Image 1 (cartoon, rainbow, N blue to C red):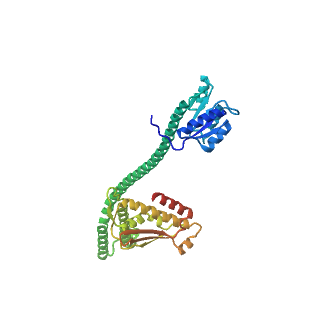
Image 2 (image 1 turned 90 degrees about the horizontal axis):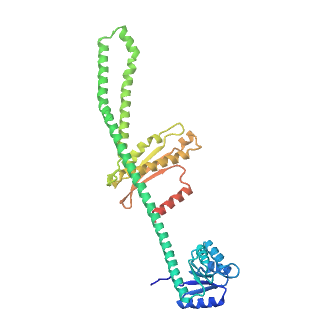
Image 3 (image 1 turned 30 degrees about the vertical axis):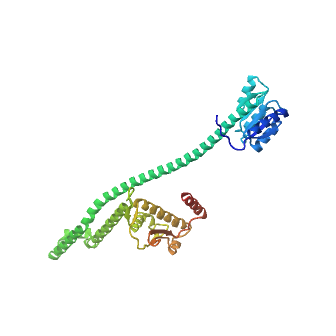
Length: 390
């Protein structure tokens, strides 16, 4: 059998008989291995911990602790528990052999021994020990590889689920925007004719008043009840407000459709300013004034940026998160400040775009005048960045 061994094999021989130590040492050195010797169990344990031999030949009958107790202590020690132990003893009772194997020995040689037998068994167990160590190392490496693969798979699954969620959400939002757009379009298309009809009725009423200046008591009471003069003045304003409301709903609908563009399969030409504007409009409910603070100002510093190839839905989601984080930051900075103090130093979010890298890249910068990130948060971001770019 062709057996491969690791280099610099070291064998620890534990025996209180000098003759046995000499015979075994000479036989082992002829093979090309290094020998270590100990004459009692305590010394053997110390030698094993210090030198970490590849195999231990252990006598049973020794002064102090015997071979069985020595083996127990070796196997209870995490540093040396994996080293194979072969008992060598004159005890030939099968019960002694069973006892030795039960406490962790790999083999049992009865004295008087043949050198060839000892060497043959030592070679076999060294080979098995070497194979076991190699296998454990490979299993550990494979476990790490599988762990990394599992982590990557989980991340991929998470991204896939997120993409599916975004796709479904995009379809839902686009569908809602489409459904909103139909009645809004109907209302918007009828406001102007309605305004014309109302004006014509007012003109007709004025004509009646000119032709019949004395309409009678009953009509006079009705005119007073409905406050005709106020109605003539306020109704056009009411229609104008309705027109503004319809325009706002239409803008929100357009923004929702812009925001929901998924583009998951192919990149699309996209106006990043359109994405910023639609995202800001969707978040307007968080930007407007309330009882605790004035409205958050959004400053637009847009450069000349052409359409870019990207996945619009994913880009809009990033913009949404960044702008929402900026709103959180300025609101956090308002803690402990009065309404008047905030008015003097208003909350601001600045949206900047520009071409960089000699016009080959588009830059989007979202800046707020909040408190800024703590050193701890900056450190976490740096760690995440380094992990993703190793």
